[in-house]
View (tube, rainbow, N blue to C red):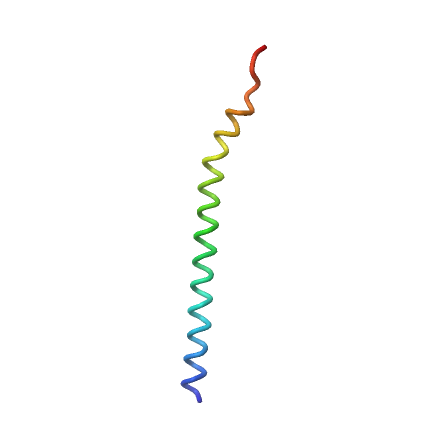
Length: 50
């Protein structure tokens, strides 16, 4: 009984670690993409002389 509960707890803990790492990678990708998009947006926002 105790070993089954321990195995189940470790499985849940492992799944939570995997989910947390996936979320961290997604956040990192979003940060990198938004940091690359901002300079492009600044260039587009520069007013042109008529």
